[in-house]
Length: 205
Image (cartoon, rainbow, N blue to C red; front, side, top):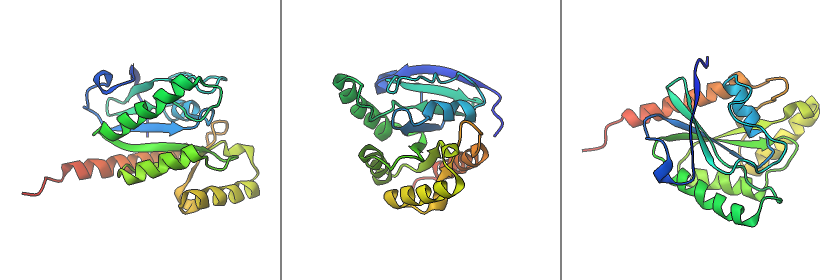
């Protein structure tokens, strides 16, 4: 994928504030500090399209970015960080669930996991919720440069077993080395095309 144009559209907390449903959307979800902002920035080849922060839990809104005037990246709030105020935590769940359940042009959710961590209860809940609602998940495992090849293989097997998938279904990624960029883009494009084909099928008479 060659990204020629990126544009921040707006931030929102509720459906009334979302952009018009004119383009297919790819949403990004994951625990705070999992590398979500870095993944998005590297995919679009921009340093600061999405702000990265040393303070996990900084993203507290749903942020929309138009890519190549063809589709939209949606940055969802990170979840699971203990130091985020409880009042904000209580808002995140309903805010994300509302978006995920109502957004008809949502094509795929990129669920991001840290290769050094076993998937958390929140990760498993998110994956289960996506699968039960028919939303295709794309699992991206970040920070793979932090482990040796043998450690990486063992940890990928553990993560795959925890989430009930084959190891080959996981996309490995490193913000430092940019490993995995083409593979992630390839899967995103495939899922976008599948969603387009499905939307072109006329309803039964």
